[in-house]
Length: 116
Length: 110
Image (cartoon, rainbow over all chains, first blue to last red; front, side):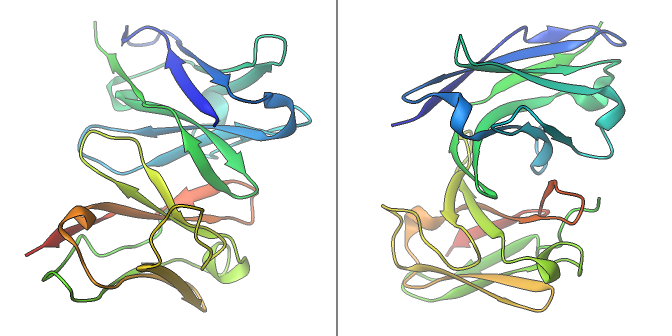
């Protein structure tokens, strides 16, 4: 059974960079695509982007200029960096496996608050 | 990239059937057979319920089914149960090779 766990700071200052890591267990990450999805408090889900098995990335056009997703197959981890954050980036951030075109395994989510 | 449109809320009595619609465009739902549905209970991570329009992952009840016509997809929950009370989100692959979620629907079991 694939399991995912997000980790990283729960508080980030405005204009700084949000950095999160997702650790995957139960299978190697090299064979699938892996995604980041976020959910502002009380609101809906938003795809941030994903990295595929070859290392190619696809980002939400509205976030593309600020997002970087990388993977480290030796650690079975992938990561998210979101630069120049504002209060609008406050959300629960989920990592998930993107199997074909759907998200079949999810992490529990981690709340990141942007505040000074 | 605009969110897919879902009704804010749908309700039904136990045992009834309900349908949740998800409306997009020819660049997402209308152009691909990659529509998925997720159930999210309060404070929990979403759970995949339907993929590729009408396929169920192992372990998901056959009370859940999906369909698509043109630019609108639908999730049908039959034999509504108290445990089905949750938020539901649709998602579609898009022509710019990303994915977009719906606005979400709160299902209430009366």
